[in-house]
Length: 185
Image (cartoon, rainbow, N blue to C red; front, top):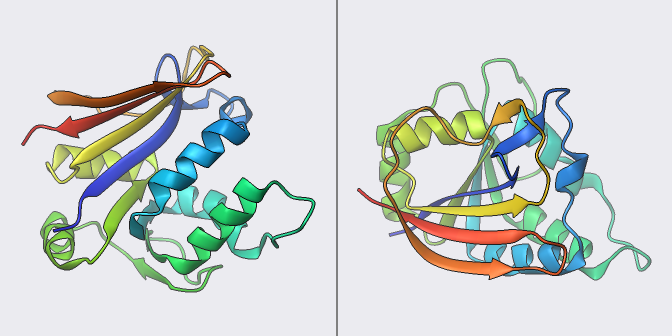
């Protein structure tokens, strides 16, 4: 059975965007990006909300270039190889291959999908992830804490009680801290 993994980069106060919708403070350096790529190798399908999909669709058309960091080229190749499901009531077309649009997030459909998926499933976008967390579908949270406090913005987690078990931690030279948790069911 595949795991459903919520992986996100947040500020120290657990915002994924600041109050202006910006997240430039979250751009990973090469060391962190390389580690992200290691984690992404197990992902066969991405589940995205519309806004996160529109941000990530950059990787569909970003050409791999010799002068671009190797970690960025590697991520772009993994992105293109994965299936993508976008949950949106407004999108009519996609900007990437291997992408479908679903109008409604249905927990029972996701549970069934997890039971048959050959590779792990990643969920991106805090709004969509909140639905999956509240439904008890998320198996693992991968949290990259960035050494910045933004004070307000879009929260990474819903207002709900989430019992977690710490599985792994790692510190990077940039001050980013990686925490991997198992979600209690």
